[in-house]
Length: 298
Image 1 (cartoon, rainbow, N blue to C red):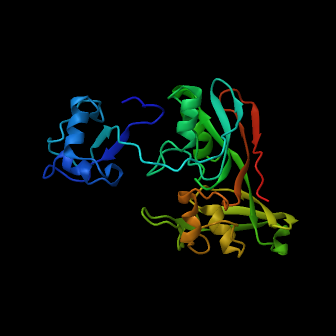
Image 2: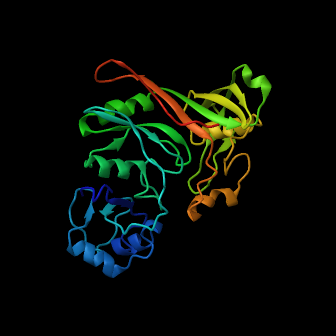
Image 3: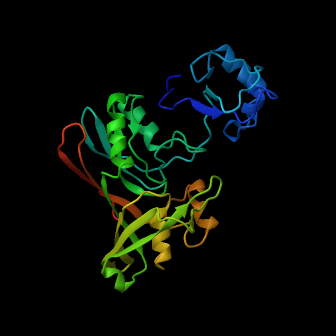
């Protein structure tokens, strides 16, 4: 189904077999909390409940394990993110933005319209806008989107194949010996449902170069260069060095009081982590491109 007002239809993977109906499986999905069988019947009657091939579905149909169902869900109430999304660059293939803190890259869970993707789709009037990579909701900075489906794979490959050079800035307590670059390596894994990623034994899959580049009254400004892209990698590696990033609600310790502030409209304590620059050889033109955020961590 096409996007509606910039928001894609929701995909639900059915986790039960024919002993349950499609409707029963959907009502057990957290993302559809509050939905009723009557709601599903109305969607089905309007042709807005379909399978992976776009064929209409009846909620009473026996479910097929691991099959996909698409529908438009009711949008959650969201706290508006009161920050602009400046465009750093745009051509006929890509658009690069300077994402603010607290704005998710794309819809997930209770963050749907208050995301960079939906804002851009609405601003540019195109549902073809798609992220080439992601930034955490709490991280600000340079973020690249594609504008045409036929170029999407080429730009996404830059990140999947680690051909894009990314540099971050972070504010954290000063550790003077880190003026000499250090590289942190370990194995990071994140389990669905667990807020935090964890360091575990096994083959290394996470590597970051970290350097103190400036001392300010607010703390130390660090240059972070990730060689891999594990979830929360930079935040974990900074905490591991004893210099947890200012404003981090998860590392080194969980701080629920800090995490809850944005839900109450308080955006005064952002995670001081910014995707400072992004550079790559353009896969369409071969031209070297570099984009720099206008946001500061200090």
